[in-house]
Amino acid sequence: MNLSALSYYLGEYFIIYNFKDYLEILFFAIAFFKIAEWLKQDLTKPLLAYFYGYIGMAASAYYFDLTTVYYTLLHSAPAAAVLFIIYHQRTLQKQFMLSQRTSITPAMAAHHKDWLETFVRTCMIMAHKQINITCVIERKDEIADFIHKTFTLDIPINQDVLTLLLESPSFEEQKLIWLNKDGNLISVNATWGNVLIQETLLHHELFAWQAYALQLSQFSDAIIFHHNSSTHESTLIIQGKKIEHLSIDHAMKMMKKIMQKAEYEETMKGTSDESGKRNSEHTTSSR
Amino acid sequence: MNLVNVILNTRLLPVNAFIAGYIVWLMIGMQQPTSMHVKPQLCFYQEPEKHGVQAPDHVDIWIQSSRKTLHSIDARNTTAHININDLASGTHTIELHKKNLFLPNNVKLLQLKPSNFTITLTPLTQENI
Image: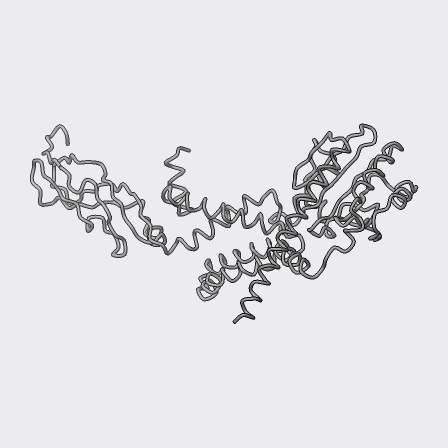
């Protein structure tokens, strides 16, 4: 089939007449791909199915010549887009974090300034005992949807408690240790959640835990740390990137730097918000 | 794996996005005016008897209307019809008009190239017949 015949059939059956039509279709396809990609990131609600459903309804209304339904759907598309944005998990998380920032202050942080050092020291002890450690550090984004825990500890990190737990025969080294940014031990023997497992494509070049960790780091700002007791090398996974062959000391420094930077940015933002609020209050009272 | 899972599969996201993009483009674009380049064949009718006709095979036209109209009138198969009953033997210049194309009123003729062309009528000898 030559090009002119193909062009003829495209015109006849798909009503595409010239190259400008291809450009227009490409524009819509890219826009919809980006929207679909973003909607797919919400794992709590089937927003992508709703999106396809909306387009399907509009197409059906057009095909069956239901003009009122068609124009109603067409004109209410911006409102539907706003609803998608509002109910998207990421937006809700951001709003939740904003509201949290003003009311809750990390009271425990001051008491556990050196929690990371304590944890790393315990990891080194465990490495000598041939125990591998895989740990997830939860930061601003909630990861409860992606990690499954059988019990909750939520206790400040303490070397004695950690050693006791990790040396216990019931501790399974292929499972996860879950910490948070305030230095609390949330759980041990945690596993990757079903939502994450379903979303992850396993690759032969990666270990399963690395694939899940990479996926988790794309969904959230969590840091995933792994220490291999046989090679004495550490791996860090953050924001969809894997950093391998690190010494444990180097890994700790990197984690500390990342967390301090995020904390500093958060503090600066909080300060600027507060000063802005004060200024506006001052202006109101002077009036 | 059921149909919903297939539709929502991450790997099929580009394909689904392309299909959705095409459907939406079609829904919106069907009422929008669009231009189209067509090469209508020149068709002569009521030819004088025992005469041969030498003329161009086709002309180029650019027409504009809604996509729906262009599709429904099968614009790609437009033909220019020219009555040559009054012409005698020899060379003549014929001017083409929209009426020769029998286009509906809601189809706009943007350009016609060439707008006039030469036609030669030659009497056929017994041998040629």
